[in-house]
Length: 102
Ligand code: FES
Image (cartoon, rainbow, N blue to C red):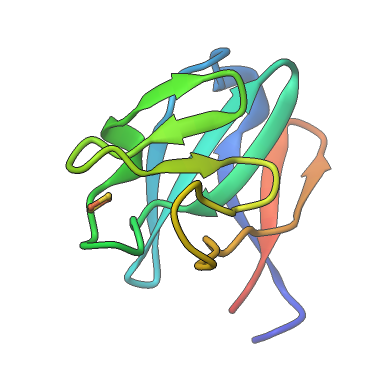
């Protein structure tokens, strides 16, 4: 159902700068909190599909663990071409992090 929310994690369990891979409906998402900003973004590198949750995080950038492409967690853009990772809007409700069903 498109307008429903899906709980993906407990906010209090999110540690700073630690990437979490979350699988929902066969989609892999990356959840991470950097500088107190929470990001929910596709965990699938658009080059060859590496899991970005295994990459190195520096400020708001995750570096792909396979070939080094750098993805901006805020915009979803990379330093190489015009591809963009899908970002997911989220809502905090009590202690839960929710995204819209897809
Ligand atoms: S798979 Fe990510 S840069 Fe190649």
